Image (cartoon, rainbow, N blue to C red; front, top):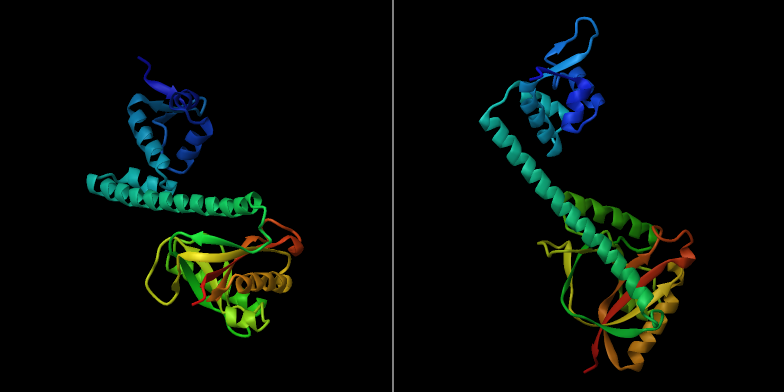
Length: 275
């Protein structure tokens, strides 16, 4: 039975690179049993295989090498149980973040898909929202122009990060329909961010289920009044009463278009029959 493995032999046996073993030696994580006196080669004994397996397992579950080094110097049941529990919690949190990221991507693709599938995007039409939706919100300082909206967006993202909101990276604004009726189309009252779950506090509001007039605005924000005029005319022609606010969502923005003339904004105004 062979007593020692060379660096190359052990690396091949364990499915890692020779450079990894050399690095572990230099970093005092896993050192060879002996060094050849004449050739300077690293030699590893069979009883070191289990130790290397433990190191590779700890590395696979995501522990940094600095922590692995400390674990291997002083091992105990209580320490390893505590470390593994912490790492399990970290992995589960990471899984939840990955799930949320997947949902964010899906939501973006669905929004783009709605635009591609509909033949009447740029004409007002009625859609039904089947359930309540939740929005994280931030007040926009008046006069509510684009600069103030951008400031509100930054505050919104800051709140989302600090309070761990499960949001979708989609941004938008709410505009008073009273202002729209007065011909003021670009003064937002709230910056909004759809969130997965309702949370307590004034920073979360409900976009209620029900019927909405929907329309797609194509072009820069300054020209959005053209689309709002069409929507308000549609509402009046169909004897509908509109909600207090419109909801605008960025669909095609700086992420997808280089020219703001190609930007697309989905607009929803809640409606109900006039009494």
